[in-house]
Length: 441
Image (cartoon, rainbow, N blue to C red; front, side, top):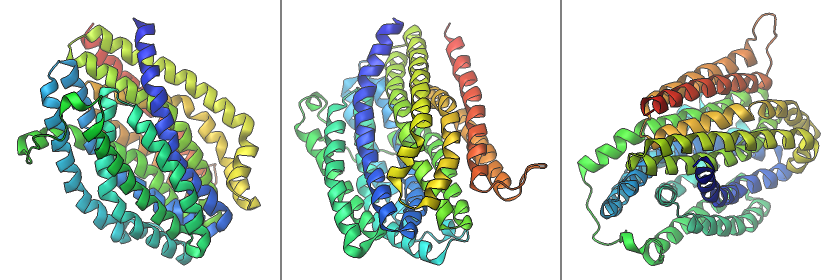
């Protein structure tokens, strides 16, 4: 059964990885285009993009409650309840869009956390002001995205992601080089966001695979009880997402105090780290689906085997990624920037993401497997301890205060603390998953 579950996870994860890498192509495009356009614009997209991603992932984290909910409904054979669960999550998406837009239009509390260069801050504000209008579209699309993952329907996600990236690349290049800089990149991203959500609703209306669920028929009004259940499960998931992503966002804000070169080099490595996160994330999403199906059917041995298969696959992929980064670091960094100072900073940081690949893979799979069991609150506490406590606070201390006899380490302090935080997270999440599995032995 192990190989059968591993095969199911891989078959689900591969198209998900293609979709995620295609979506990542937009961030890569912006980083590369702005890296050759100007260091301040690259630094601005590091700061502004970090804030945007943190806000978006915090809100979509709550909406991801639709994934374990739908997978367990499907596993239990209650297909008639699926449309209602999705529709309630769309109502939540529209509710959450309001604070999301307001935060991006008024980012002063977040920007005040660090003394950012005036030119970088001005550009980051302009970038966020444009991206604010992408929030409603992105929240609705991410709801559709999580729903399709819950059913293993990955084809529309691949097609939409590939099409979006192919459209975004020339549009972003054109707008940036027409003198709009980082604002042009924001306009391109906002336009593409609305295209994706339109495609998602079109597929829900016309796609044959989703037709039996009648997703857009008999539309339900907001139902407080159903929405409460989604929020109760989703809030810890959203908080976990926010903690994980915001630790990198706040790191960018703190690193900005070290100058545009430091934050630009940090952006390059953070971008590489995000790319390396995609394969374990794809495997984690597929693992959640398989664990959710099994849990819904009360097939606990299959749930256990699915979780173990996900861990084994992710660890193997992590080893390959770490080796590739180590061997190709010079060529990879050179592709991102033609500034020797930025390349020097980036090269000094790559060793840390090489080192934490295995820990990141374990904590990601274990956390998502726990979500498949609808366990989210204690994992949220682990994320708080490891990402904010060890990673962020520890990184700030190492970067600006040092730890005797170690002098202040600058930007490297944040990456060392991140490595230590991920190592601790992998141990704690592994223990939590093992405890849950043993309950059903």
